[in-house]
Image (cartoon, rainbow, N blue to C red; front, top):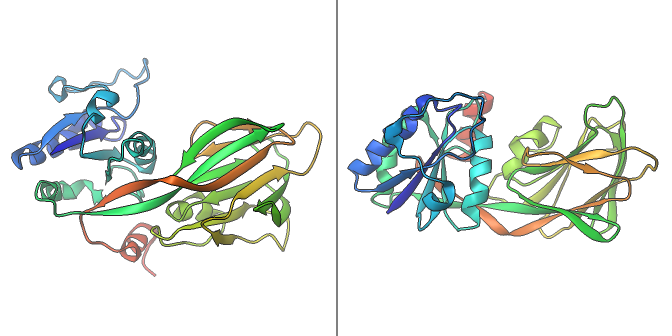
Length: 288
């Protein structure tokens, strides 16, 4: 069995958690390799242990059976993109503050020994294909595990938006933007915008307006096979910004169509602890 360890060095200082995990896994007879989930900033002056023997992600993921990420949800989201294209399951170790997608906390690394004996499960998470069409041409394409967020940016003004399902109008409102989320992303920005919490193994599309200037703009939970579209209804020089899973913002122009649909790709998360979704919600967000 080959396990790739991918630590965020800004969270896992000195790669201490990753190196401890390597020891636990190799003692159980598991082959390990360590790679960073992203390139370090040239000015970061980050000191990494030479004994980590870091390799490039492409090389590390070749013939890998499982990927273990050390960081917050952002690290897991970033690493999942590489793993999904290769069909590699992902296990998250929380080194951040909340970490809804992480299966383990830093103090639970000993449970990694279960991987060698196959004592773990796999949970399938729905994803969204997000595209932007401009004058009939596709100008943007990404796949989201959490959400696609359309916002007004930093300018103090509002957007006039129309949200459609299979080109039929679901809602039209003015506001700061809209979140199109998966069930996995329902506990992220969507929840902060007033959207519902949805079990992560469900397959739905959640539409949550952000600070809508309307009494009638409400969140919607849609069928997984619905094609959700968003466009700005006002003309002129207004523009908006699209961010997929918190990534780099893409500028949307008047007349652009943003379309979100269920992806054929799915993220596979490793389950080791047996904790339920409800236990995790209460742990992360406070007791009910």
